[in-house]
Image (cartoon, rainbow, N blue to C red; front, side, top):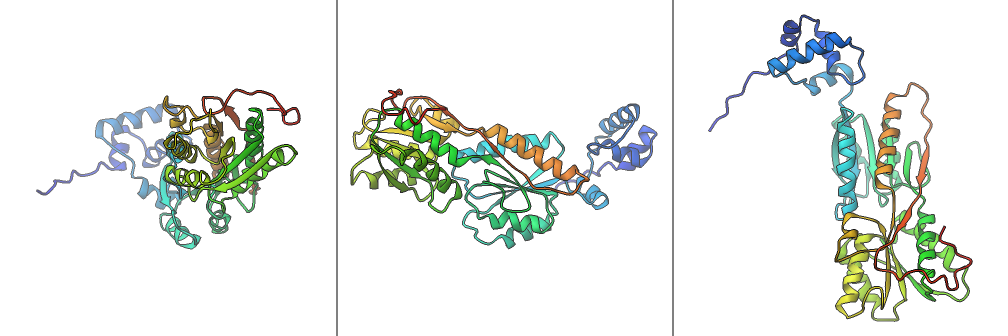
Length: 348
């Protein structure tokens, strides 16, 4: 069955009904444009009567701006990114901007994604991952696009970085494990090539290696997934298990806990676990994961602020890096602190 297409109401029709110029109608639907309050009210009333919706694509031909922000990510198995997308898109929409989502899972070369971003004429780009090579953010910035790398590390190019101090996050987790009185601790990180994994491991080792009586083991999951965490812990169980593990992600932690419990090893009585991220499911009653929480909403808010500052600034651009603080969320997968043998590693 064919559809009957209703004729679109034009800007000129709104201008005629409101008794204003076409440019006044255009300004009424442009975020940040100067328009008298009375004129704005007449235009909005006329638009409502006629059922008018501004044609953003047509406006972009005039203004040179599409209102599109490219959101580049590659880890859709991890629920923390679903939370990121939800908050990020709502904050952008509140500012009259929209998101073009690009999935770079298994992508190793930035030029194809850059070509797509340029075809859609995005106004700016957010790279929302810690596992993509920094060459992606650099390539987007070199093409003249405003770029913010969320979950990045210290700035390594002509773009803004918003994230956490992953090395300090590793120290925080190590201190918490040692506060349980553990003498044998483990690091079960995410993919070994990830910069965030390497930084968290470095911080973890800063604390552990300073304790002469403490031994340790280091291992990595192949991905930030439940299955990867489960398989990694299964492999560890073929040898000597540490008393407690810092897992590089909550989903890895949950997979590891499931593998332990399948073999009858209780958490935390048999093995303690501390995760990273504080995703929503970490608080579920059947999980109750103790974890190092990164300030997700704050990261997103600062990312959006950095993005808008780049889009609106008339001054020469100067890249910046903003690293935010983490905190431990205590639940049930670690014993309470005993403070035995941890005088040199305070929790704060």
